[in-house]
Length: 254
Ligand code: COA
Image 1: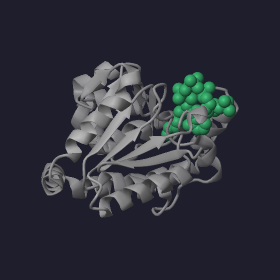
Image 2: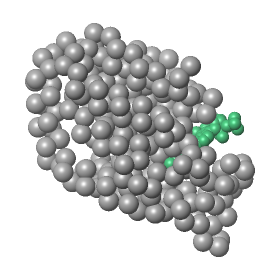
Image 3: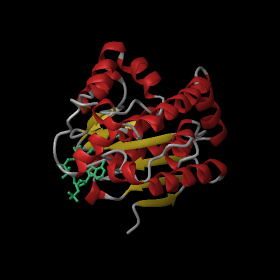
């Protein structure tokens, strides 16, 4: 089975993360597939809504750490940055169903989704500092806006996870539901959206996002430069190697 499944039905394109044995961690190939799917969905007048979903046990463990070591995305045209620009500027509504761990980009991509339905087992985390990295996906801009500065600092400096109820409280999730119902509820809401006039959906989303679209895209690029540099530095190498060797990282020398 492919790592990404794409299914179109009645105006709704559903993108399913399907690499459950590796906790749906994203390889560069998976970002490329998602970016291509978003670009195609944006251009296709028969598509009105996109849904991102994972499994009832896991949304995504973020970037594949082996891929970070062997295939580091250190140029702006790397698939991950193409995916981020595509999701941030996607003109039609995006609905997400999120259960279990949502790590790194598994959380930051949600800041670019319009409706988010979280399983009560959802655990959101952005442990970039713990990996010797820095925020991506404009999360350095969007997380403090949504969570407030101090909770953002806890999430981004300490890299501490927060659970579904906290996501609901700050507005990152629309509703918390039993994990086995999350994908179904996302589909229901997506089909409600798909029954509405496309031009109104697009214009409403454009107006909602207009206030800071330019800053968001500029921040994605600025973060990508730092992120790309940090990927090659000793702290990140130690963090990735430690993960692969199933041990705690030792940052005492970096
Ligand atoms: N990259 C590569 N492989 C990953 C991965 C990742 N981001 N996350 C999980 N995996 C792999 C594990 O290495 C393991 O592979 P194995 O069976 O060959 O040993 C498999 O997926 C299952 O993961 P495991 O850690 O045993 O599952 P868990 O349920 O105990 O924990 C997580 C789930 C998501 C909490 C944990 O896997 C994790 O913290 N992953 C790393 C998250 C991360 O730092 N991502 C980068 C963000 S930028």
